[in-house]
Picture 1 (cartoon, rainbow, N blue to C red):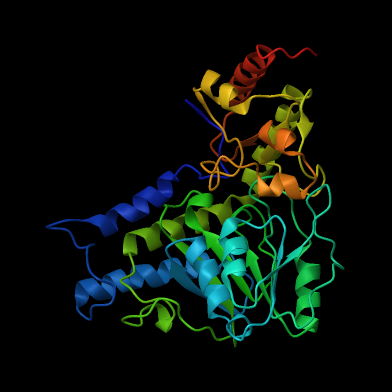
Picture 2 (cartoon, rainbow, N blue to C red; picture 1 turned 60 degrees about the vertical axis):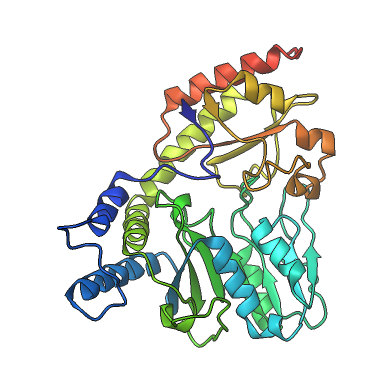
Length: 364
């Protein structure tokens, strides 16, 4: 099996797995304590959580605090629903290609969602008009479907100048590049070789949120519920490793990108070729039956679009926003690769995909 779906999830790093195991100890072990208990086992577990928090915090700009969540979706909900401007009913502006965790949450707020358009490359104009009285702007750093890298720093500066808050979904950026500045930033561990089921919200110092999950007041009162030392430890180890390997991983991805461009030279690239994370290759061919292609190439794991919306049967909202027709969107595939992808795997996958596509009647 060849795995080329790194935007959906990434393989767990061995170092993260090892870090997690000691906090999964059963009877006779010392790692199963509740980190909110005052006794020795509880204090040990709490120390592991706080070490993990420090490691994760190192991924973000200085001057903020990390709250652990169940993933980026919860983190984004906390940022949007818990912020004072959104709770007051002020408009929330989001880009047209935001992940559904942002897009649908903004739409559900009382102030409604104002959609910021993107161009054919999937880029938001840094000078795009914000709605009057805007309270929150949310634009992702790297798009999960087409890999576009947005001008987040410029948009953040304009947002602050208007007295609004800026939320950034940095899920696809974390561990791959420096995270851009914002007021609140959401990430998910399993997108940088950590475990599933845990994410984090970074909040700028001096900014207060209202909790959306209430209970025992854990995580500084922002997110009640027992924290998992194993998941925190795994995320912390993955974060530390990602920071240590960032340049090495980026060089490996660049090599794979150049190889993939040659292997799929007859395909059209969706999204910007210049302002893009090169571990994301979103491609299309006219008239391609993607469902048939995926059935014919079952030994390769790739995506027909966003994994989070792939079961809806609807054309990609993101690909529609950059100007593709429903037919073009349905004829698109997404290949994602990274740290553990070998070039020979990519070459074999390309041969299988291209061969299956040619059998649908294409000619060069």
